[in-house]
Length: 391
Image 1 (spheres, helix red, strand yellow):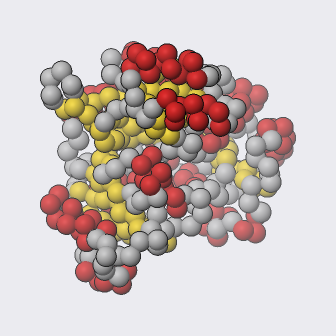
Image 2: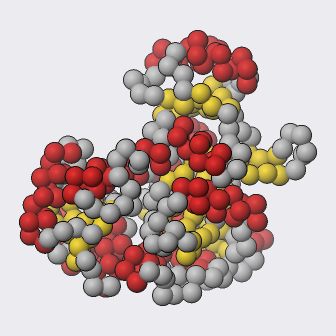
Image 3: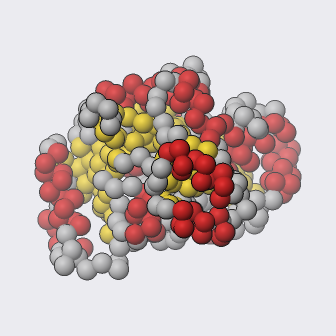
């Protein structure tokens, strides 16, 4: 089996996906924008061949690189990046080289937030009202009917990038006067927190692993306010969340894919009861160290699970949740009550992993992170508070 992996150098955990593919007897070849000498030692050891492509946004260059690798290794059976940014590139390569999987333009239904709404409807899961305004008047027509605040973000965007909350017509006018020349989606504001439905499907579209994170604040607020992000996993997932998540998986019919779905947990204004509303889908593994959180909570290697499912049809390890786990980020701009050394000493029996964060993701993830675990939710929350307590 020949497996083409795009951008295995970023995010840095890409080498782990490649490693377990090779462990399963797969011939892994790759294209990336980092010089070969700069690659991690582990990644070099797992690749049969690496093609350096300095500008991976140039599809012609990617096409030529792929053709070259095929000439050396033969037909490609899979192409993946496990990265939102390259999903369209993957799909176009499947078109041009007859590689199995989601093709272009079908991939846009997985990426455009407006296109996701039809699948939420098919799954019978509520979602926010929306429009695709191109000017102030079209935005005003939506707010006249649905009121303020509203959220605006690129229809084909990643994470909370270029996302804004508009509270009145003046802010809306400023937005349309300065927005980039890309299509934005405008949605009604949903007051609540985000809960995820993450997992992996097999070749039949059946879910072989699923779990959830509960965000303590929104990623958008974290970035806008330059604050710190925190979220945790619970062994028993909320029934309404799992029902909604499974319905969306079925509506899309996704196969042999990791997925990361986001839902709002909000209060129904009519009944006063908690309910789930769909936010967006991402057809790739969850980011933000969530994969490692699931390793801590489930005692399962997420990267091996993926490789085993692709090669053998199902995971070889037990995927039953065992305990609570959490991610806590710190930013250097804040003064914390307890030092890093104190935290590591006090929580050493509950600290799965900690490290410094570098690069563009620090705005969302912080400058340093701590992955914690516990058999008790109250104890886990106490540890989260300990890490985050500020002067």
